Image (tube, rainbow, N blue to C red; front, side, top):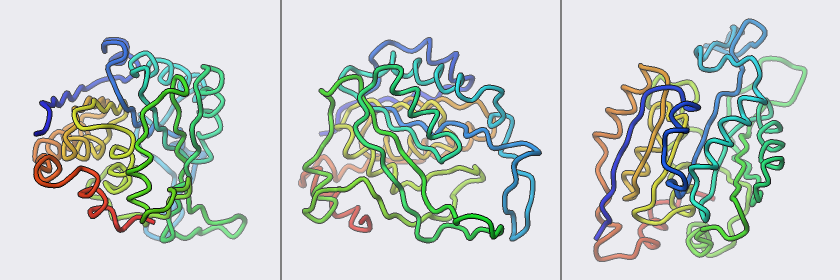
Length: 263
């Protein structure tokens, strides 16, 4: 039977709300923080044309390195001693996050590369087309939870490597940096157990919460944007726990069959 789980969705500034959460309360933290790419000095591609990149006020930060230090430090206080933190990013933010993790004395377990073979083409002809996102995986000590056997099963009986080839999917919501559910499904499955608590300090449109609830985990989500908070709330409320995980089959066999699309 599934353990009793709770879903707590909190609207507001992550830095302020994290300080109010109980210490060592989260078994796994997934964070996709702002990359600070919005503003007149940042360009993007929209409908095949060059346009100014503007994701929202939440993506405009005066000192991105100091911001990273503050929110990561706040997350570590909330993280269980055997828990792990997974931080997604690109070259714009990834180096800063790595430095912060080192300076805070965390144990860096892996730097995971998510390779998107169907990534959008590049309009400019002056550099390589970006096709990856990076995920730091870290813990407080070398004594952390990680389901190596499940990761191996998902990968067809072979050791799972830190290069994850996974196609980008069409967004289910208007959120500009929405992650695919299959990515979070892998992270939550191998990084936590049934009944564990998953925390997402930058919840966005709620993908982490959807996956956490489906897999029988408790979830704490924080979101500052009213529109995305409402979208996340509706998505998570409409999600049902996958009861097949807790009935006649083992968790690992169900996860393996559901994730055969991974490589």
